Amino acid sequence: MALKPSAPKSTAARKVAANAMPGAAESTRRYDVILYGATGFVGKQTAAYFAENAGELRWAIAGRDGAKLGALRATLGLVAARVGVIVADATDAKALTQLASQAHVVLSSAGPFALYGSRLVAACVARRTHYVDITGETPWVRKLIDRHQRQASTDGTRIIPCCGFDSIPSDLGAWMAADALMQQTGEPCVSVKACFSIRGGLNGGTFASLMNVMESGEGESFRQPFLLNPTRSVPSDESSHADPIVPHHDADFSAWLGPFFMGPINTRVVRRSAALSSVDAKSPYAHDFHYQEYLRFGRGITAAMTAAGMSAGMGIGQNAMRFGMARRLAKMFAPAPGKGPSERSMNGGGFRCELIGKNASGDLVHVTIADQGDPGNRATTKFVCEAAMALAVNQKSLPGGTSFGGVLTPASGLGSVLVKRLVAAGMRLDIRTIEKDASRPR
Image 1 (spheres, rainbow, N blue to C red):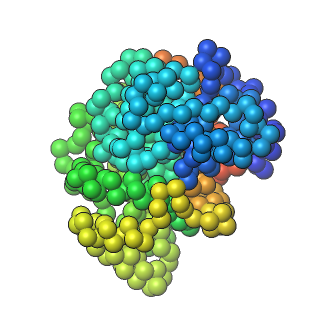
Image 2: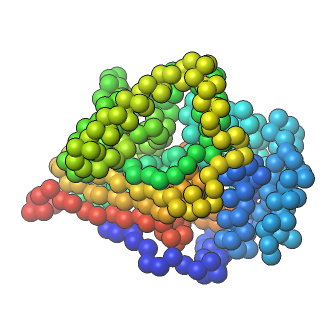
Image 3: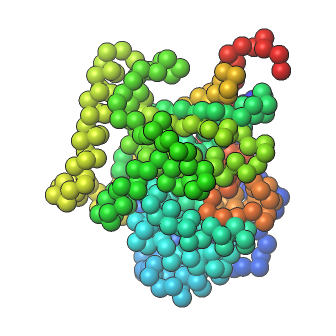
């Protein structure tokens, strides 16, 4: 099985394809998608992405500052005249309800989400409006599940947080590996391990979200391996799923691997995907599915020493962030909200996520997800925008059908539809089968 893009489609071709897809949003609401937080660092990038790729979709930019929104719209070129502007403060429940009433989908990039996202999600659930965002604040996502899972599931509303670099490569990649094993061998996937190679910078919004988690006293829940799982799906012994703290050499990847700073976010999302899938008798995930991920350092003694040093530094840094003095010091050197890497830096970045899935018989699949551009900005923008467009355009093709909803994950809520959209957008998503014993009868 392979999902390899040829040359990326031209912008014009992608617009035609998007508008020709089945299940396009009906025109019962004024907008197909509203971009909330559009004047922030990532928000401006989502607006530029929609201006380039949204075709005939009806969309608007939204936030709390009308003057900034007007200035942003003026930068959007030929499409500016038909882009709506909606002023709504994140603390104004009435304004947010009116906003949600006007859209089929809301895309939010306004973090920290624990501070600025709860009323917006509540408005979307109340108005049956689909929602995506770029949060990595898993304690906040846990609260969304507790508050909204039942109602969103009943109404068929898809609330899908974590649609940026955290956690689409991990979640979609693990699902691709599990699905390929089930399709090719008839056996569910018992484990997936992933390793990341990244080049990129930090924006102020991401840093502010991290600081808010630490300062809110939710750091302990952040470390729970099954934080996002339904209670019934949490194993009695969680020790084998604990976040790694030391480096090791991995024979399958032929490299030294160490703890990945995004692992405590991404692993929770992947485990929720597996748990949500478990209600299906044909789930591609085994009931005792195991997922873990790492940062790749390369081969040889230099890589081993680098892995050891960075792993130790990461552990020290995480412990230090529990104390106010360390957080205040970090804030002095981090970018402020609304700020981030330069255009040149973002364009020169990139990421590669490699995943290996295994079934009980020892059959393996290798998945690669990779793209050019800073992962926390360029890739995040592509991920969340394509996720929003999938909800707006491809409803009839989404997993579970048009009536499926809940507080979902990228894999459970978007699945193969998002894979196809990302491939069409020029991202690399490959699956390669590596059978342990090709002669074994099927």
